[in-house]
Length: 488
Ligand SMILES: *[C@@H]1O[C@H](CO)[C@@H](O)[C@H](O)[C@H]1NC(C)=O
Ligand SMILES: *[C@@H]1O[C@H](CO)[C@@H](O)[C@H](O)[C@H]1NC(C)=O
Ligand SMILES: *[C@@H]1O[C@H](CO)[C@@H](O)[C@H](O)[C@H]1NC(C)=O
Ligand SMILES: *[C@@H]1O[C@H](CO)[C@@H](O)[C@H](O)[C@H]1NC(C)=O
Ligand SMILES: *[C@@H]1O[C@H](CO)[C@@H](O)[C@H](O)[C@H]1NC(C)=O
Image 1: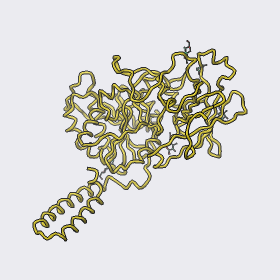
Image 2 (image 1 turned 60 degrees about the vertical axis):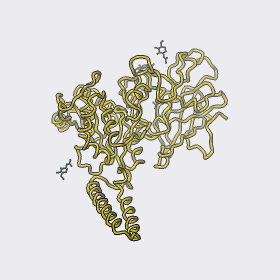
Image 3 (image 1 turned 45 degrees about the vertical axis):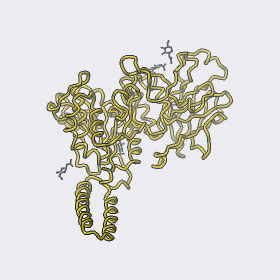
Image 4 (image 1 turned 180 degrees about the vertical axis):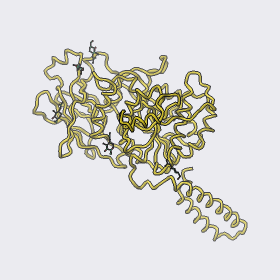
């Protein structure tokens, strides 16, 4: 299917066939070939004429307004959840709509009125769209809700919203999906939107994946569909959805219909469904070497910084995102040989000092700081990544330092400081060679070109001599060609 969009493939086929036919003596064969040529070239024409309107060359940089967002919400959840959208939405640079059910008091007129009167800060939010009626569709799953059909159709209704002028990607998520738009833009720019792409991520919960599918892009994590695929999907979605009344969620429906089109998921591990509860620290502190694209379920996890609210904690994270979006949560590991410490920096979030020597593969395992998501115990504690125990004894846990301050000077050096968090371990406090109070991390802004996005490499760090007592200085930099990350 993809090659149909590339007229060059078609032309070389025609050239080959013409060449072949000129050497062919048989009249019958020639006329058969002419027939084939006639049909294939008219097919190609038909396709290119309908595509030219929608699709432009991907040789230019992908900007934020090449992306269109379809956000699934409802009248009851929107008033609270809009605070999460405010974290990342910018109405000047972004396009899209928040889809709500119609029986609500936040119709589009009311939102517009408010905006005009400047009464509300809704101006910093996407416009509200009321979803179409879905009563003609059957929903037969017993545990779920009918709104799954409405939300699946957000895909179709978002595509219908615009005339596709300059749209390269449609991005879908929930009202409690916190996107990192600059990273999304950068990540999608490594793919050709003229090809059919369905890009997303699995759940962290093995059981969820086992049940709903490893090949599904989870809706809360958010997923992206290239404009060329979205256009076709929108056309067939309604007829396809009728075949899946028994499915639970909206994402299962979208997945099924994309599967029927013959397309599979392209996995981007920067999307996070966050199918667990409690303390997300383990996951956030061991992010894969890829830009952070989304975080879901902020209401189900503890605030990601201690002693604050969920929304304030995320605002705090965005202070770092606004300084160096691509580096957020990127993990660098270095070793302090004097004390045999292993130091793991999760940039813009936290630093951990392990009081022992841990090899890099062990540091990269996710500490199981969280509780399982699903009901029941069968497979509940299985995750789709390697985990490591978060020690029940606080004295045997790493010392955690949370981001405290961020500044950048004229030379482009970014300094982030991390302050030791409260630890319930007295032996630690008493130790003369105990960890410092503050860790200062120096970096430059992370710049990644398409090649580095396609073949990413972790950066290296050094523990520098510090003149200030109780302070550790760390610098993060590109690794040398053959540099290995281990305790020297
Ligand atoms: C939105 O983007 C514009 C253009 O980049 C920028 O000037 C403005 O400060 C942004 N607004 C917010 C609220 O971030
Ligand atoms: C879409 O295109 C039609 C016809 O060209 C035009 O009348 C309409 O205003 C356009 N809509 C948007 C949202 O750009
Ligand atoms: C938590 O925050 C409150 C209010 O900002 C502050 O008074 C309190 O000291 C903080 N507690 C800790 C343990 O940091
Ligand atoms: C943050 O860093 C800046 C620049 O180094 C400094 O002026 C400011 O006092 C710091 N703020 C805090 C709360 O430590
Ligand atoms: C430390 O102990 C207090 C009181 O038992 C408890 O409330 C707090 O959650 C503990 N903190 C950590 C980081 O374990």
